[in-house]
Image (cartoon, helix red, strand yellow):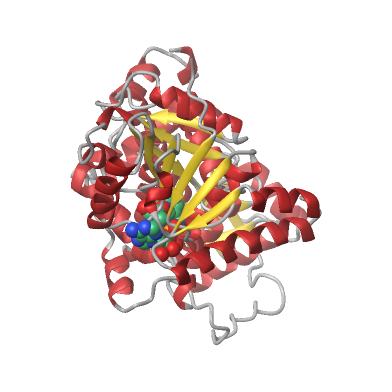
Length: 491
Ligand SMILES: NC(=O)c1ccc[n+]([C@@H]2O[C@H](COP(=O)([O-])OP(=O)(O)OC[C@H]3O[C@@H](n4cnc5c(N)ncnc54)[C@H](O)[C@@H]3O)[C@@H](O)[C@H]2O)c1
């Protein structure tokens, strides 16, 4: 029979622990919240009061419900009060020495059947389990910040976790109104491993000068449909935390894509950690120079020549907007509609500086591609034409994948490799990314929507350009395309 887990303990009532205690209390469980000292305990109590007050103000909780929830939480500074708990979740800072001391104490204090869970984001759950005399009853229970709101819990089972323990913890997660995803003990689990790989890669593209910070953010928000761009998210997570997670991922994977981008190291060393310090990739202190006003008036072009797949349709759209077509040799600008680098089109022209690449991404974005010979006026004119057509322009260099595909395809490739290694199921990976990051779709849903062949071919081009080993298409993806399979779920 599944364990009941009616009395739970939460150790550390900081950002995560206070939220976790609230989640348990909201589900009707008795909670013992433990902090290091009286002051920290009051701070923890304050977090829970503030959060439930907010819920009342928003009409999500009644006064009576809030009182009931608060009545279920007891606050203490003594770990001894956890002796009878059925489950203890630890949420103390991410320092192995702290976890070591705590798990040694919990193992001594708690009854033998108590399940001990860690909320660690990047430490080895197996190493923590091995500190106790009950490694079979130690799991990871990785909540997402803010715990009361976010639906995902990654339940981490190690090679020594007893049969049934992870299932019981997953059942508890469902009782809390959450969606559990049960995974093994690998650095970053599902969400941080896929997310930080992608965020780190965005920082690398910035360092390589493929596009500006704002253009990369815009491309991923409007072009890939993500809730926010990678630099906004890095600043929100904190660059120190992001750097640390990348470092841990790299230590395990030895994959260069996880090696923290040098710009992260530099910002962290300079104390620019993101929103929490008022400045990271961006400044949040209200002292930023006002952004440059868009130049008044329409695009400074009289005529346009469009080449590439879909040229006729774009020419018609431009003509309807007042920019008539002309021959390639006479036009003010030549637009090469292309999903691949365009410099080869430029060199065929008598005046290659007039050629600008254009890659339409979804319905909202167009990547405006400048080659090494593109004149800045030509790129600006195409930027304005794109705006006149109602799309958002994203300026970028003439590199394989431009911005959106260069960031999206390796992320999908990582997810395919993760699944193929047996680490997690397709549905669990999709669920984890949707619920853990607020993505509109999981990586496999995105893969199916784009098409397996397009992603495989895009990855081949990225690999050929950057020679990054992990950009080479995952063998499974290659095999599926060769076999003519159109959805990874059909394998
Ligand atoms: N912040 C996040 O977004 C996030 C998300 C998921 C997981 N995590 C993980 O959750 C854990 C906690 O992170 P956080 O951001 O809540 O940290 P935090 O610094 O906000 O809170 C930690 C709390 O633990 C208390 N504490 C320290 N030692 C203690 C001890 N021996 N006994 C009792 N309390 C003690 C501190 O006083 C503090 O209030 C870490 O392992 C972290 O990796 C964090």
